[in-house]
Amino acid sequence: MPRYVIERQYLLPVYQYLALESPDLESACREALDDGEHDWEDAQEDYESSRPTTIVSTIVSAIEIAGEAEWATAIKSQYERSGLMYDRRHEFIEIPRQFTEADCTAELAEILERNDCGKGRVLIDGDDFKRLKLMAGMRVGR
Image 1 (tube, rainbow, N blue to C red):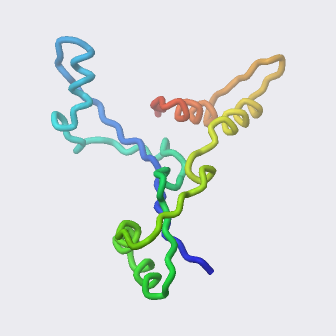
Image 2 (image 1 turned 180 degrees about the vertical axis):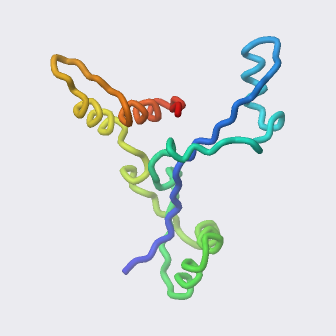
């Protein structure tokens, strides 16, 4: 049976509130985006708003492990798997698109159907509202 190493991820929002003194909003925004100006030491991780697990959507995200010796290496640790993935001895395998990106259109259709009030009206709140905000890239309040 074939064996593979596949890189996967989930996106974890990390946020921070900065108090900035700047001549205008544009300058404040530029400063806020400057990682050299402000570290992330007191940042908060928002596990509740993390996105679903996906396979990394780069062009090449998998390799096939052929031999038993390599398989023994692959099952040792994250570090070993990373080394195998990028050691340039393996041919990369493109991950099929349906495994790399959530189908937002289908998810949106499901949310709309679930919240249909009839007569072309939709009432969205609770978890569905939070999910729509996440899909739109908006921060979800607590």
